[in-house]
Image (cartoon, rainbow, N blue to C red; front, side):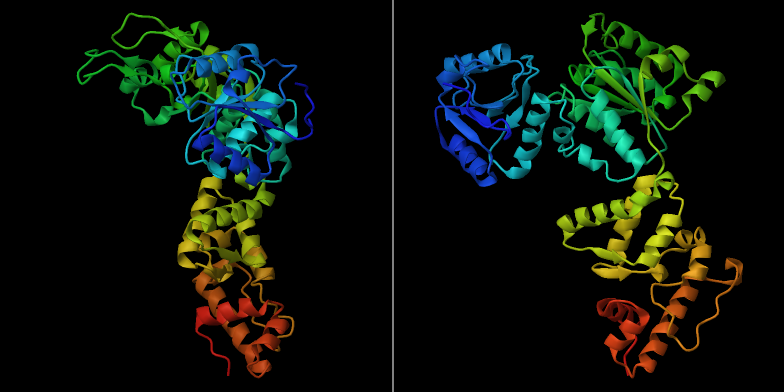
Length: 471
C-alpha cells in the first residue's frame, strides 16, 4: 500500500466493517465531494505513517466490546499520535487521554455536524497553515474587516497552539468570550471541555465551591459530592470572565492552584491534580486595581502572559455595517425575515458611540426586525439616541431621499435644540419631500423615485409606511 493520494486535497480514511451508519457517512462524504478511502477495521491495527493513505482517520465502532475496535483505537492513538482521529458512533472514553481524538460523529449524519469536526482535523494536522485555521466556525464569529480585528485573529492563531495563559482585555459586550472560545477551538485541547465562569456573577461565599467543588456534608445544603469548574475543565480550557471582580481571598487560592496545578474540594482532604489552560478576561484596568489593593500583583503577572486587547465598537466603526449584515443574515436563517438599512441611517449608526458595544448593536438589529420586518429602515425609524450623536450629519444629509430637484427645499434648524422631537421632525420632513416629488411628477412613482435618487421599491415602502397615496 503506497501513499499516493493528492496531498493538496485533505482526505479521510474510514476503518470499519461496514454497516448502515458507515454507508450513511460514505454517502454524505460523496455528496460533499470530500475524499474518503474505505478500509477494514483490522487494517487500522497495522497501519503506519508511511502506509496511511489519508490525512485523517475515522474509526467506525459497530461493536464497542470488539477486540478489533479497541485494537484499532489504541493503535491510532499511540502509534499515529500526529494523525487526527474521529470516532463514528462511539461513546468517548473519559479516561482515554488521546490528544489526536478530535470528536465523535453521531447519527443522523448531517453537514452541520461534520463541518466543524472536519475543520478541526485540518487544523490539527497543519496548525501552521493560517488559512486552514481561519475556516473554523468559531474564528469566523469574529466578524469584521478592520485592522484591529485582523490583528486579533492573528494573535489568536499565534497563541492557540501553546498552553500559556491568556488575558483578554476589553469593555463589556466586545466579544471577549468569543475570543476565548476561538483560542480553545484552535488548540490541541479542542476535544475537551471549554468551561466558562463569570466571576462577577458568583457570590463570594459560593466562589470556592464553584471553583473547586465540595464533598457531601461540607456545609449546610451540600447533599451530594459536586465537581468544581477546575475539575470539569481538566485537560481543557477554563475561561475566567470578569476576573477583576474576584474577591481577594479567592485570588490567593486561585494563584496557588495555578502554581501547583492541584487543589482540594471544599470539605475534602484529597489532592486533585488538574491540567487546565487558563484564559481570563476583564473590563477593568487591573494595574489600577493593583494600586488600589483590590487585585493581587502576583496573580496579574501569572495571568497576563499573553494579553489580547479588544477595541470597543466605537474604535472600529467600519465594522458596523459588516456586523449588521452578519446579524441580519443570522436572524433571517431562523425567522426568514430581514431588514434593509438605508445609507443615511447607516451613517447615523456609525456616528453613534455604542456604549454597549456589539451586544447593544445586536439588540438594535433584533428590535428593528420586530418593528420593521422585511422593510426599509431609514433615519426616521431610528430612536433619537442614535441621531443626536450625529446631528451635524443629519443637518447636512437629512435623508436618503435627494432634495436636489425639489422646488422648495425645507429649511433645517441649525441646532438640535430647536427641534422639539427630532424623530417626528425628520418623519414629517420626509413625508413632505415625498408628497412634493409625487406632485411634481403627476403621481408617477417611478419618476418620483428617479428624482429622489432612490429605488422604486424603497419609495413604495416609504409611501406604505406613511400612508401616502399617489394622485
